[in-house]
View 1: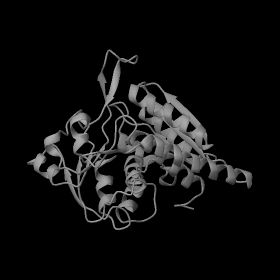
View 2 (view 1 turned 90 degrees about the vertical axis):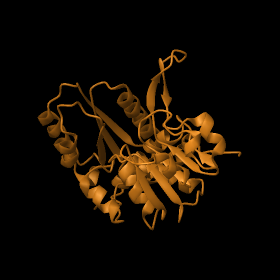
View 3 (view 1 turned 180 degrees about the vertical axis):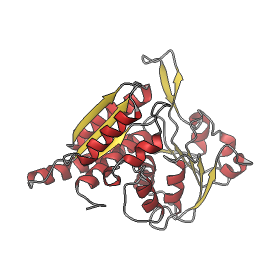
Length: 294
């Protein structure tokens, strides 16, 4: 079967150009330039890359961006004080705290401290709750990016069986909510995780598989039915001496053997990743326009 590659990079570029055009018009009319701030703790390789890409995306969209850095030994109190400062800063429309945080800091406590009206990552319980009952809110960037890709490629989701591998708060759970909701996916959703029985059987029955478990090459050809749509959220760094960086990004799907069975499939890198950052830009623009919260 001839599969079609879902190009997240090209889709994200097109959307960022649209955003840049809108920002230009807002500023020309005397409006405020949207401002995104990011807090980065420590020097985790993946987090460094993500934040660098977020700063670049802000430039492409015509946003103002601020990066606040802390060493890994920052105290929880110091971090909470920084969050409070950003909550009160009228120039900052939205901000994110890059996860994961060091072990001695309670991630949930930090997320709870963020003003939900500035929570462009969509992690605050108010945004999560509003999303789950279909109210306007900031939707978590990766699920929003995946949804945007499916819509962009006109992939039918209504009434389809969708299997989501992984139940994280960042991808699995919100993805399931969106895929089953009327105004979004309207699909029949199954969530599989480490305790699921007969995972292969569940996957083989799926029209759409969204893999977000963080285990390289987990999804193999014997788990995919012909014509399925496969979305790979995994980005694990795997040692690769042939690369200048010393590693390559590996998805949760064994691409070479799965792709020939698919109607559509996302590559890693260049699939979901760029759309995550693009969705963060969409949320920041919405925050700047006070689209969800006055």
